[in-house]
Length: 477
Image (cartoon, rainbow, N blue to C red; front, side, top):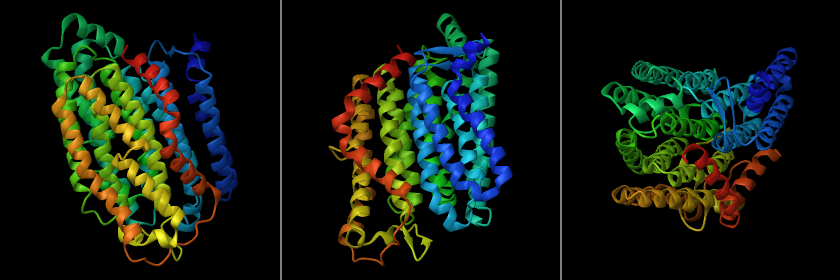
């Protein structure tokens, strides 16, 4: 049994063990080893990715508390991509801002372990343990720039509001346990199937879902997102917008569809309301934002609303659409924040959208990639972002939630305004002073990969769709 458990958690074990060894190296060598530790951290994430790919199709550990199935594998690979991209993007930024401390890549590694446990949780307790392991590292990362008032404020806001959401989550877990007599997802599902959903379980489900929704920054638990995105150092904002979002959405899918597949009528209405409010707020609130990181925060709120459409459908097709959406969202956002990191003038980072004026004439390559990613986020065909929205709308229509599909299309059209506005500023406004040339191959590699994916998704979509279909059926047959 112990050997089977170890085999099931091997990718997480690789990152956790490697992270602790690198921590010892960092303590002995100090901050001068940041580049080495960053490279080794990315290599460690790559090794864990290989271990995921070659792992058995389905396995469980710790009496079913940990589930390694195709769904978890798909989401974990996206988490590893987001974490690796954040480490790669951070190198020149940390050096320039004077915060090149060796703890940075190690905190991302430990947060990644927590994220991977979240999406493999087979019980409420395992889910909460993974969530808090992720949060402990993210609290520190949000306030990583200790000399910056904005960064310290971002860390404090994230800590306080995350603690509140954890309280809601724990209260919901206690009610679910009290009225079902178990914390295991399979056994809760059995209780619901045999006895139905009583009022106590409904109350527990509401608090539980509220705690989960905070982690994906969906309305009405979105209030931390703009301030944390704006205040945290840009590479950490890139991390917040990719890996933790994917892990949280994976946790939402597992945490709702695992224990409550037969209670769809009770939780579906909550998800529908949250989805509609998130899409609406993301479409409208981002329009007047002068700061591009703050704009991307509201954009992420809207995108989580679109992703929730697939969950609202409550079908295997819906789950597949969410997974495809997350894949495209991670790659696109990594590229967008790479472009934001390239917004440097006279050695200082700039975040104002007006600073992008005339970028097409001063840095045409950067402007082209940036515009492509903006078009993709807006859902313009034939770029990858169009297919992300196409599949979630298709799932909602197949579930006969036609009003929800119409609302999604309308908010998508409204939201396209602030993406196209950036393109207009870059290509048609009078040029602002040129940005500095950003050195280092890491940033260029991320931008090239993200831009290529945006254009070539239509060509290579078939294997990705196949993998997402297998992953979805393992969660919701």
